[in-house]
Length: 612
Image (cartoon, rainbow, N blue to C red; front, side, top):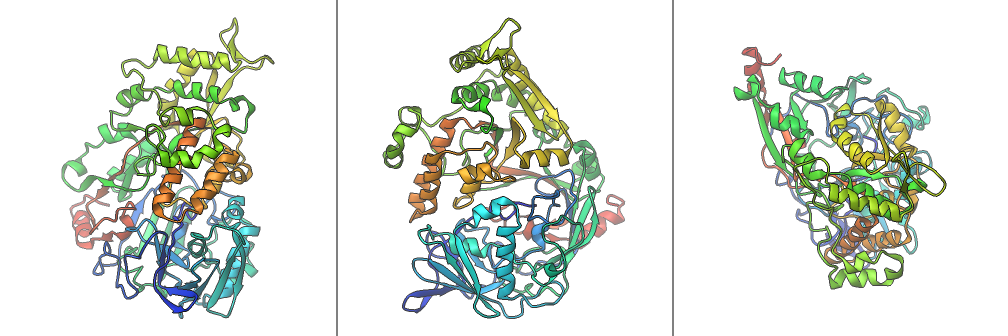
């Protein structure tokens, strides 16, 4: 997935022992406190060092994408396949049981001064690319330069605080950071870059999409590509890093196969008959009604919920503020009031969801209630630039509507009054127009037919308010291209937020991200107060202070009505054939990268004719 590195947590404080008076050398780094694991740790606590290796994990992937046509996730061109992170190792790797920590992967150690103005990574002796060529510091330098000069624009925003990258010798590479930058997170940011092979891209264009398997630094290689149908990654038998502590018990499958379906019903039928082995359910209706089939009833398929302690609620209908019709916050607030979550949850979702109000839902980073003194101290300097409601009212929570009827008439009347105040008045034909006679039109863009049952009742409520609303259903390639160009009024989307937010916020809510094609700033937020709060978060000296600053940003964003928040749950709905061992689940991941294949169970099901 093209953005799989965009949402990596930035981590970072001192860990290890001083080897010189003014530098620290360590095996890992943590943002706020000590590392959990010492330099001689054998494996993560949640890893099973005795897990057998073998078999194939087959699934639709985390996002259940519907198509792909490229194995290059770093550029705008093409629709990248899922799972491409299996190909490319990084200098450091996050821990799934520590929200702020990362440990050496390609790098055996890192050295940095207390102020973190720079960091030097020492690469592991023996690190190799999949073609056997050694990984060197020159490859790290080239990877950074390629991403900031040729990669999709959001890379330049994310890496803006890296002033230079220098190869000191074959195994040591130095990152110097921009003078005046908040440096707390920058060593880990540098360590999160995928390390790509310079020698390979001397003859292969990096700026073109392709389905040709690349030379890579990770544990897996692309072994089979069926564009739009499936992609398979299998273990590199010569992978240099298999025995590293961070890899023990991780990625125990010989192969991963990502299956692609354009129709969710067809996909689920394939799963029920053993067409693939693990299925994450994203439809509450299916979760409530469709899990009654022979293989499940006979115990051959396991249905479970996997809890996840990461923020889970950044899903909603994102309003494109780049369009003038959405410039007035009263318009945006009114449009949000027309979405009846309570009725949708009861009628469409079987009561399985809770309403989202925060961008950091399901975490202690969400703002709650009236503004407390610590948040007030942060926001007071911006009082004259913020809505009065930020200071005078509790953090915004969507109104609770009637679950008995799709139409909550009282709320729609209040929404209509807001549109009147904003200058969008109703004419003889029932449509709302501004002073220039332009109709208030709202077009939802999507590529998933299952979306219709959710958005059509919302559209009907908007129409009752005089808004010319409709759904524009397009194919996946067109949806991706239009999203990257911000050619939409409203899109449905979900962002995976970090428990340790940092520089990625610049691409999610910052002014630079608003103008960068392909960024995740869906709503086009370009606000100086938001920009300032983002920089304060990046510079926070402690986790406590970081949390206060994130809550202040959450409070401000919610008062701007940049989205219509949807719903959330703090778990993954998963069904899988009973052919896996699992072990302990880490708190900050779905956990399946630590599963393993149980060959005897698989063989028994095949012998019984249950699995094909």
